[in-house]
Image (cartoon, rainbow, N blue to C red; front, top):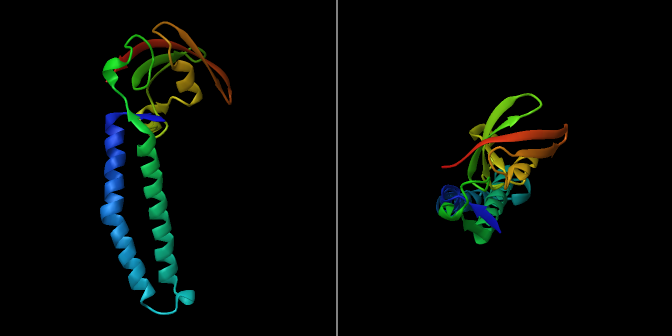
Length: 155
């Protein structure tokens, strides 16, 4: 089971609808057109259309599986005093005295450029359940990071 924010659930649903209603019909038309051009064994356009069809079907199935097992998080029931999924956490790396802020999200929502880390990442897992003032220890490839929780908020 995957827990997703309402926003990410809607994004995945919209992508799936677009693939099914817009992209896949176009891919099938392109495949039929390429197939009508004659011998398939020597038809690069046909092979490319089949490759695109396979990728599209694969993506559709992947998104369907995510949504089948997804649950939208009710943020009203999440504790506000500790780090949970969808918490925005400001913390200090005690070794470098560097402050960072990340939102803890499901793996399907992870986006480092947007400041979103997975709860399954070493840092995300170490922060889960901690309160302001506590120190989390994250085992990362370069060693162990000691992170002091400065603030927790829910958007």
